[in-house]
Length: 383
Image 1 (tube, rainbow, N blue to C red):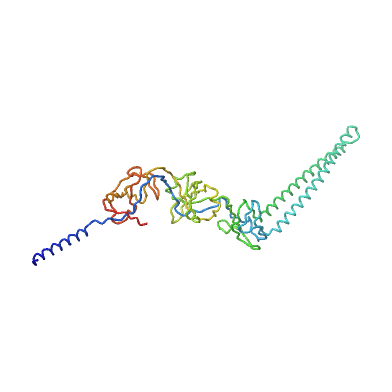
Image 2: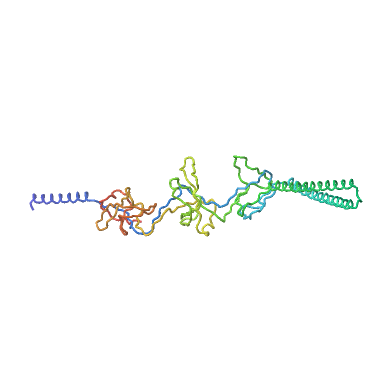
């Protein structure tokens, strides 16, 4: 082969290789996208708490004696369940018990004196009546009758005074008993003793006005609990008592407890450096769900404002600004932009009122480079 022909053939081959390389370099590379199939089902409009909520007991009392003193008796232990009316703690009260005993003794003495005075008054009245009968037979003088009548009235007055004194003595018993009761700390309801702040022979003092001190006994009724959760003030107007809710308790991961809104606070909490919120109270729908709930557990609440069943729904993460979605067409291997009309929405699903059909594939990895309308694409099935 002539050298000129050989050079020409080599040149042609080199040019062909260059053309092929340029075509490969300039060829559009498909972008790998994650897609999900559009389906039908329920879509809910929900709101959730902005900060962690708390499981609270329906009844909880942080109790302290009405007066200060030295702890003489502790009748309960932490963790013990007590009935309403049980004495939990008793301060030293020997002086007040003595005062009560004295008041009771005085009351008994006053009652006896009243009985004696009234018996004398009855006798004086009978004597006056006897003289009046004798006067009718002219056997008693006017003077004797006057003296007997006056004496009867005086004795009756002494009787009434003695009875009044007995009533005063009885009232002193109530005063002394009230003073004694101030040294007793009594359970106002049936519950569990959560905490005791104090030991035998220690002194306890009531809290001064404006100064919080630890309660002597913390009593909790764990037979009823609810969730108190702060909801952003913007979302609060849409919430009403009776709405369905889902409760998530950190102590029970992976579980959702059905609940119902019981109360929406009628005021907004303004906490420094935090968003303004409204406390919403939610109760467990099933009694067996809160049997293991402990007051103080952290919890979250998702309140269902509205719900639509059997509607076309797309993943919320697939919806772009302006209610646009990217649809993957497997037959063409390209991405197509679609405008949809949305209905109810939440963090997971969005209702597509129009613009989508069940079974179509929407792109959820919308933040990937190259994921734009018209781009060539392939499915990324990497889990």
